[in-house]
Image (cartoon, rainbow, N blue to C red; front, side, top):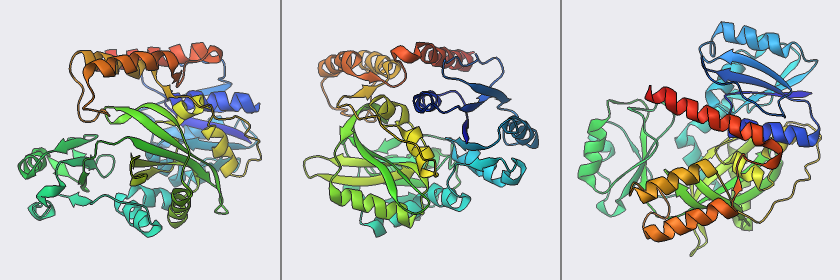
Length: 390
């Protein structure tokens, strides 16, 4: 079976290409591309097909994808987007009998997209939860929140759940919360509100096979965060109790394929607070791959491919040189926020640690074996910024 990924060119795609090269597996890449976007370059690209982002989610797009997949005797198709995954399931019969979707079932995807379902499963699995409030435009959804739970961290319950969209925000009191709600034009689902804790994240990567067995379970501590996202990450040994609860959660949600949990982690009390789970490759996939965690390999193995995963974890930290440079610039210009952990660290200490990370951290995409691929992604990022500004 030839694995094929459909995605924009990204760090996840780069580590997928590297992984398939390591395993000696011929791979395919359906590249979603905008008009004028530079073509991806990588010595690991074998078969590539370009599809316009305007043709995605249309009958024309399915016809193009089916035509490309028809060149294989048997292929396994997957993606890193829930929206694309659902679209592929809706058109599964049109993709051809030679194509197998290496994706969670449609019902599972819809279950996972519901944050309320996730919170209920986390509670039933015995995972620790912060006090959680589901906010709408109705004052009754937030007026009764106790004052001692502030400051609150606010997150949308899913993509396009709130207009205008946002990633994460914080409010210090009820007046700020009321003003934030009033500024939203629409809340189609709800906003999740939880007490803000100045803590690092704990990411738990793993995969689950169709028979319910768990493979590749590994923890990673997010030592530093920037704009709410992982800046530096390192391997972390998980306590047995948390491992068992993670397994129970994935069973309750009927997870299949690769996944990653997000927790807030209190090292002093050895307590992990559940935030969410994503049943796909994600933002830390490339970083943990650079440390030896072969998530694309575990993906294939979880869907029945008999491959041997021999890469070993290295006891180092990983980051992104691009993100470190941006973080350093924001630090020097006084633009860091509560989304950056640790946010109350002295500026001089942030600068020293960032400079040290640039030297000692493994980069998520840049390596001697894939310089062209890394610079191709950097060019795409610059093109995106130029396009946005113009």
